[in-house]
Amino acid sequence: MIKKIIRRFFLVLVAVVALVDGYLVFFKNSNQTVSAVDSTENQSSTSQDIQESSSTETSTPESSESSSGLADGTYTGASTQTKWGPVQVQITVSSGQITDINVLSYPDSQQKSIMINEQALPVYQEEALETQGSSINQVSGATETYKGFTGSLQDAINQAEASA
Image 1: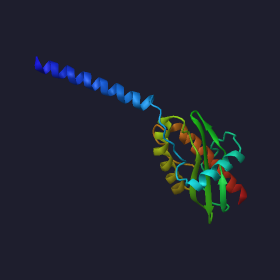
Image 2: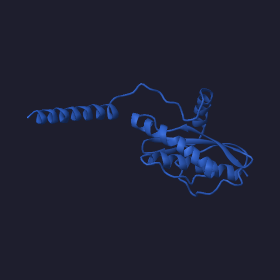
Image 3: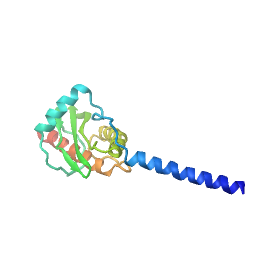
Image 4: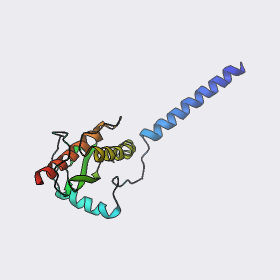
């Protein structure tokens, strides 16, 4: 008899915890502001200027070419629209190699998007630097960010190749 009461108590407790967790994950608004991954405050104002002057065309990765033969400089990829918002990256090329990738914009209007992008974007940046191209592995659960990141990255690479 006591075991049944204890089981029911824990069952109700687990159900309440699951409901509260679901509410916090999906419905609670956060007043937290998130800046672009790997951007400093000084780059934020520059990023806004670049976003305003850059085209808003959707770009799809046409190829996954290696980045050999790139002209040195800084290249801003087209802002690539995804289901959850635009993604835009900027690459720095030095000695024909991609040396830095800055994410200028990414979907950050919902808490879930923020959490996903905080985990996925650093992985995408690291892999793109390792492969020196847009041929990178997709992070599970971050499909839209992957599409936007690789699209904008490939556009920036294409610009660097065209300048070479």
